[in-house]
Image (cartoon, rainbow, N blue to C red):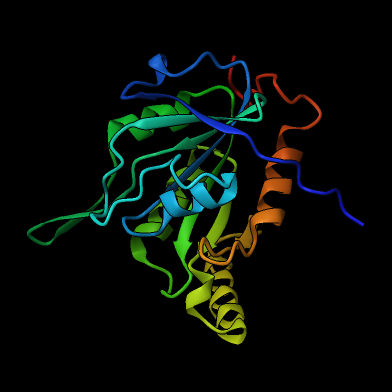
Length: 213
């Protein structure tokens, strides 16, 4: 039998618009990011069993800062602003703030970026381009499919398989993937266990990425 997921204690620590103003990089840190309306805040609240931790808004794209939440006094869960595309004439450009770029590239204790994907939709160009950006910069990633309660089990499997096949057209290997639902708590145990494993055995210690000094 696998380990039982420990009780999760969570608390808000800070919001920042500059990675240099984030908490000291003394703990393992994982970040959640996705396009607008992917259900990021709801997922964070589900994982932490705290419906008031991340503010859920009816207006997409409300996260504008790097938000740190301390989990069990051991590791940080970070809520990042979203990304998407901007269109100017015939030019389409992946759009995300310098806040995100500098944080992801420079945050030395960032152990993994979890990219959230709405399981109801086929691979979106913005997501695929963002994945490419992360891989180009050698950022460890995992994929979290959200809103699984909106589809049948078969439809979930079909969408995940389709997504993986699309990624394998250009990738040599696939990152860890998780299927979740904030409504039913599906996938909660697997996702939390994975994060804990990422931070083990040095929970509470900075996890510096390759190339960081």
